[in-house]
Image (cartoon, rainbow over all chains, first blue to last red; front, side):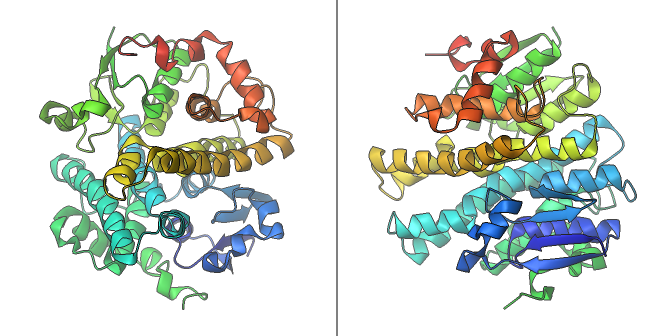
Length: 214
Length: 214
């Protein structure tokens, strides 16, 4: 095994990297960094990634950061099965769908942001939960409408096999379910989630299947 | 002119798209949507982008969303000059640098988020300014360290010509300067900003050069 994924079981970004590695059939070992304990701020980890965020993927003699960049690297160096469609317009659509989760939802709901709201703005848990649900609903409303209206949508976000869009979406749906959000309000998203989790690549990447799960 | 960019002069994401279009030498017209007045939530615009966010690029008969996906599309369909390095590891580095701005900084400081802090959490302007500066400092510290230590860094973030990393960084530095943040604390970032703004492609994309600037 030559690939090492530095992550945390509950991190959406690490979850994305696990799905992509599994879809590509790349064997990897996991090094867990407990984000709640601040392990990603330890000196040895900062040497690997000065941003102090997970994941980092050590592969092919380099250390890669940022989950979407990691997925694109895996897709470029291990093209089969592809994570992006063959046509440029399709690739733009899939990347845009992935970025709704990775840019418009997840960063705002990240642990470090929720902690800021609590510690510096004195917000209580109900207020933080409302914030969390608000940004998921904003993003899922947009995603649902795009999935509903596009003839490109299939069993997965784009056609009938998983792409980068599903790699980003499934962890976000998992987060929503964990926060007791009724995802039935977004039928296309819910359907993709069920179809994806029937695949071992997604199922094995679930947070509660990870060695550091608590 | 066949390309139409839907944007807003002060939007970082639209700013990125303008830089990429300029670097590629693609003529385009601009349709401005005043984000402060909620123009991106009007029905006609939502039909174009259900997320109600800018930018949207109409080009080649399609409407593309998400600034980084737009840049990648332009790079795939108009490869010269390239926005990504020739090697997979270099592309991963450039994408990761771009994503520090596009995922780790900008979404948290976006107008809609600041408005939530003000309207629902009752935060005043000094508290919001501190939030804004905090996330820029977190991201810039990480970027600066990566630029400082990597032999790949040149006059630009990766080598001596502009890439997707600079396309994402320059709008973020502009935001920081506008918020009276002393970017001298990050010498590599400051240097890239100066070098980039000497190019017409970056200079013409500046917010205050846009027709809707106020």
